[in-house]
Image 1 (cartoon, rainbow, N blue to C red):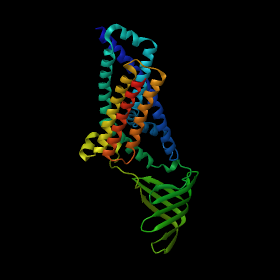
Image 2 (cartoon, helix red, strand yellow):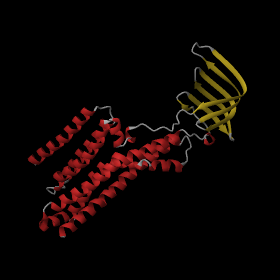
Image 3 (spheres, rainbow, N blue to C red):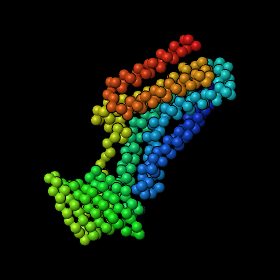
Image 4 (spheres, helix red, strand yellow):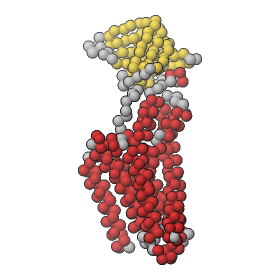
Length: 340
């Protein structure tokens, strides 16, 4: 009965510090992302609330990235507090040895793995796909009525727009677009409407210059001219991105590299907990040097994993490099304990 109460207490303490670090890390990561979104979308004058709600879709994906760091600092801070208050020594003095710590860490590891697997393998990719789709909608739904100038805005790969806007009027409208010819249009004034995934330009008092492949120039002066350009950036199709693929999608497409990325993320969580137990908890070694050693090696392998995932590495090389890194850390730790 006493052992169960100790396990419950340890679990509550670990959970409290894990949630605290989660809140801190997630807040910082989310603020950085929402700041980036505001910077990107500010020129397009997208509503603040739209950007805010868009950023919420990033949270599951952010959690999958920061969970290893949360484990590192959450476990370390929790047991530093227990050690400082002599609670570790008190538990050991009851005669249970390391059993309470082992059982609590095993139970906690199972819960964190189940949570992370659901999030990383299925939930986060689905939510991230919705984020990419909504981001694409916001980026390509331009409200010209809120823009005072365009500063040579790329409407798509083939069209550049520039204008000045004053007193709800569009003036000095410049359009450069390419179809079978290269076209330049200038109008003293006009109206611009973005609807039905199409840009409609109603231009007044200007000229159009067209240059064909033979460098023949054709010039047209007009009093009124209507131009319609398709919004090619807008799409209702599914966004193709490895971060939007669930484990089911990976198996169906035989994307074994992405499967290995996801599985190794789970293995790294187990590695961090095992590494912490043998490096710090087993001998109750919470000296500054030993803590820095644990944090440094754990962060290095996590960062290395992220760098490899973002590179063009092939499956065999990825598994080989990460296996060697994990093996090297255990060898270094063994030699460290042997010569301490």
